[in-house]
Length: 263
Image 1 (cartoon, rainbow, N blue to C red):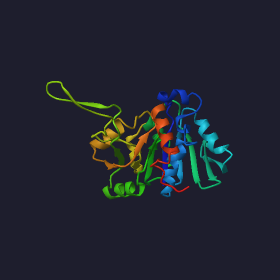
Image 2: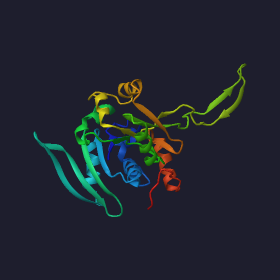
Image 3: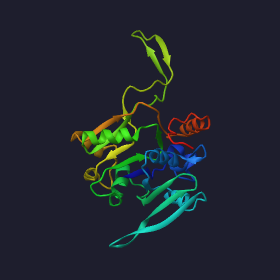
Image 4: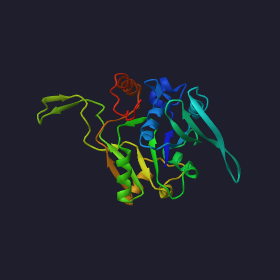
C-alpha cells in the first residue's frame, strides 16, 4: 500500500528553521520529523512511500540519496513520453529501515489537494492508499484506522483528533465574575488530524489547484463518502518553533508517545 506524505509547504511559521531546509527535515531528537512519521507507518508494515515535494524538495532527496547512513538502489521511472524527472529509490538503513521511496516534485506553490492529484500516476489503480501531513505525529493504531476504512466501504477516512487548546480559558459567570482559569484544556470539537485513507476514486474529487481541506473534503462530506476515525490518544503537529521544541523535549525525556517502534 502506498503512503503519500505532504512535504511541499513553506513552513512560514517556522521561518527561523525553514530558511535553509524544508519543514519535514526539522529534527526531533536528532532525526527529521519526516523520519518519525515514516517510522510510525513502517511499524505497521507500510514501507512504500510517495513524498510529495515542493519547497526545497531537493533537500529531502539529498537526505535519502546522499546521506551516509543509507544504502540505496537508485532508478528512474520511464513513461511513453520519455524519462520521468521524478525518482524512485529503495533505501535500506544500516540499522532498521527498508523503505521504497518515490519523490514527486509537485511544484512550489501547489496546494495540498493539487499535490496529491499530481501523484495520481504513482498510485496503483483501483487500490487503497494513505495520505498524511509531513509535520504531525501520533500514537495512532494504523491497523484499526485501516479496518475502520474497509468496514464502512466509502471513499475516504480522516483521522479526527481533539488537540489541546492553544490558549488558556476563563470561566466567567453571568455577571462577569471570573470563577476559574483553565490552562489550555483539550478541545471538545474534533479537528482534522491527517492520517487519511483513500480509495483511488477520490482522485475524481481533486484538481491540480485543489486545497484538500476545502472543496474536496467538503464534497466528500456532502456525498456521504467520508468517515471520521476518532483518535483519542497522543497527537501533535509541528506548526511553530514552540511545537518543535516541545516535541524535541518529549523525545529527549523518553516521553515520545508516538514512538511505537523498538530501537
